Every structure is written in C-alpha cells, then in structure tokens.
Amino acid sequence: MASGNDTGSFWMPPQASTVAADVDGLYNFVLWLNIIFFVLITAGTVWLVIRYRRRSNDQYATAQIAHSTWFEALWTFGPLALLVIVFVWGTRVFMDLAVAPEGAYTVQVQAKKWSWTFTHPNGAVVPGELEVPAGRPVRLVMASQDVLHSFFVPDFRVKQDVVPGRLTSLWFEAKAPGEHQIFCTEYCGKDHSRMLAKVKVIAADVDYRGPQTGKPAEVSLEDWGKQLYTKFGCNACHSVDGAKGVGPSFKGLYGKQESLASGGTVLVDENYIMESIYDPNAKLVAGFAGGMPTFKGQIDSEGIQSIIAFIKTLK
Ligand code: CUA
Image 1 (cartoon, rainbow, N blue to C red):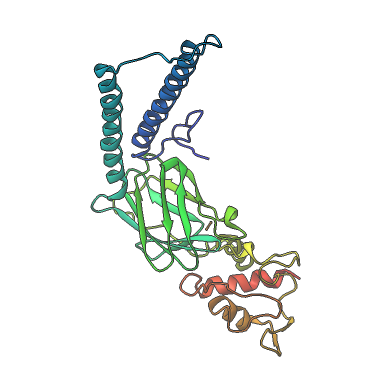
Image 2 (image 1 turned 60 degrees about the vertical axis):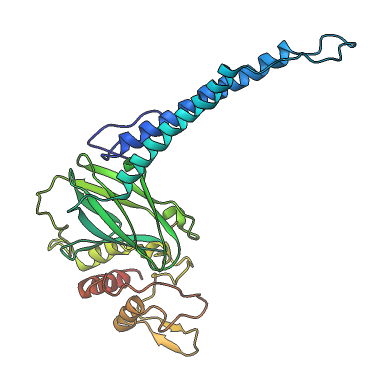
C-alpha cells in the first residue's frame, strides 16, 4: 500500500504523515490504559469473589469493612490524572489535525457516487489520483455532489466527512515520496467499496502548482478514452461487455437507436454522447433510473472525443 518509507507495524499502517506518530502515540496510550485497567479490575474482582466468598451454610453476617481514605483518594485522583493527560494530549493532537498551517498547498476535492476528483491550483482536474508534494502541508477543500462520503487515508491518519451542501476540509503533510490508498469510509451506495483513489506523493519544487494533464502525444484517442473511462469512474456504471449496470453498457452503443424514458428514440452519435456526459438526464434511456452527475468542467473536448473514439471500438 505504501512505498518509499516505513512499512508500518503489526497493528498499524505506515506513519506516512507528520501527524501520524502523534495520533498513534495517543492511541497506544489509551489502548494500554484499557488493557492495564481491564487486567487490574478483572483480577481484583476475581480475587474479592474468592477471598470474601460464603464459607459455610450457617454464615449470615457479612464482614464489616470501614472505608479507607487513602485508598479512595487513590482510586479517585489516579484515574482523574490519567484522564486529564488524555484530555490535554487529545486536544493538542485534535488542534494539530484541525488547523492547517499557513500557506498550505490547496486542492479542491469533488466526491460523487463513486469517484474522487481533484482540482489543483494550476487548473488540472484529475480523477482518481491526488498528486501532492512531499514535505509541504496540503489542504483539501472537499465538496460532495450527491450524498455523504468520507475521505480517509489510513497511512496519514486523517479522515473527514464530505457532506452535500457544505465544504469540509482536512490537511496533512506527507513525509516522503510514495503512494497511499484513499478510501471512502462512509457507506454511500452500491459501489461504496469501490470508491477508491490514490495519493501520489512526489518530490517537487516549492512552486509546484499541480500535475500536467491532457492526452500525451504518443497515446491514441482510443487509448486515452479507455484511460479516462476508468479514471473518471465511468466503469462503475457502464460495462464494456454488454452487461447491464446502473447505466447502459458501452458495448455496441455507438450508432444504436435507443428508446428514451420520455418516449421516442434517439440515434447514439457523437453529439448524443457528448450531451449525455455534460447533461446526463437530458435524454434518459428507457429502463434506467438516471442520477448520473454531469462531467462539465471536468472532461474537456479532447476528453469527450477520446471517450467517443473508445466507445466506437466497442462493437
Ligand atoms: Cu463514497 Cu462511500
């Protein structure tokens, strides 16, 4: 899952961000407190049950035990001190996680069923992969286009809900170049478990403003369209083998007469495909529920032509 730095422990993924060690330290402290008190309390209970058991059938009176001031003080102020430590430590780590440092590299994140898309300061719009510089704070400003999602990078120990109708944010600083898994960790529908993406941490200059995107010159339109098909998550709903998904299969789609939900038919040509990507509910195919989000502003005209070229190859 990670590379370029430590591989994690038996319990935990690698500590790939600057806050990870603090989060783990606090977590382990609370875990060991729980283990120690579980053993103390369970052993104490068992010991008392055996020590003060009823020893014969004619034993009725219980032992008279007066209170012990020092012992009561110990069990009151001992745990109190431990809880104050957890509170102060927890507040400090929480504030570290909550407040992004000044001048962080800021990326806009769009979550939707079922993909992540990242918009960089240089305007690059990249689905499925978040490229960030190492050793520099990165702040994400996140929006959901449909339902509640949650952005989670275990290697960074950061997690934040992405809520429709409001922007939420999160920050991290990756320690070294490498790759890390992004999960959606809030159940958001059928393909929640496939709502995945990667963080790609690169060594970059201080003036890094985002990755270069667009079709590389040596890649054909068809191949670029095929890459966009998975990058933009089209594959979550549109099969290429004729299987019925949430949306119509791309196999044999080009040149077909489709029946529309509103009645009538439409010829699937270049313009119909473009319209369906930019305004998906304009001409809904009969038998499908719709609900696809628009890709306007995310897939440019070159991307549209590439996807059309790819669909044409699926006879
Ligand atoms: Cu998005 Cu689960």
